Length: 140
Figure 1 (cartoon, helix red, strand yellow):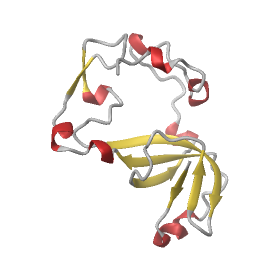
Figure 2 (cartoon, helix red, strand yellow):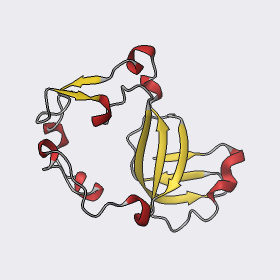
Figure 3 (cartoon, one colour):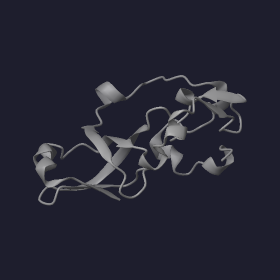
Figure 4 (cartoon, one colour):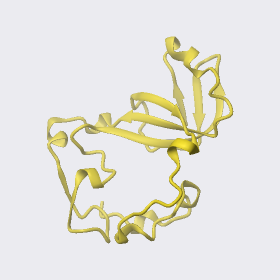
């Protein structure tokens, strides 16, 4: 997987080398409709969650302002062509990227976060998520 920058943004890659991860702000462009933007609640999107959840308590692409955030592992940066190779992102091909920021633990990592009981059994890290049976968690 990769992110290709428009040529005028290639200079913005300077000094990004050495960061193992980036924060990618991107647009849920496939869900940017008037109907999707009007959705404020979701009926039990996760198997063990409350019967109705406010959309801000979900990671649904259907939301009033369809902005997404993904922490992506960087595998290689091609400075000459403006391409950031990443191991994973949950965006579709040709999804618009709004911004890229380096992941810095001093600003982005929370040592002891809390979550509701219904999702407290979920993995505690991105690395552990790969082996987790996510298909058992969602109602969609």
